Image (tube, rainbow, N blue to C red; front, side, top):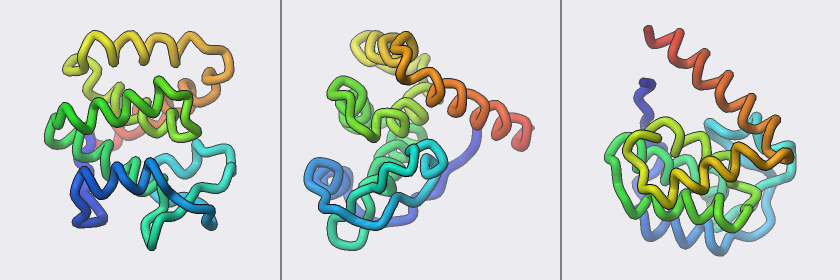
Length: 133
């Protein structure tokens, strides 16, 4: 599995606040940028919501933080425009997620509107696995 490096020193609480209360901005940055459909992300101070989701995802993948899992799962549960980013990180540790999160992942995968995201994310993860092998 690919190792991720955090780009900010913000706490999980600070990142969550950004995700929950961003303001219009110029676009997202980071791992999920090609999967956003160009919707235009939001900014809160100098950190885009997309980057905040990436940071939360990294905390989940690298540290196994259950609070981070819940935040990512909530993005899927609420059908947030950042749900594909949450999905990207959650499936990397699918064997470690709660049963509630697993149920949300299955719902996300079965929703026809998410098929393109699911396919793109799986391809990206497969390419990443080949590069690290």
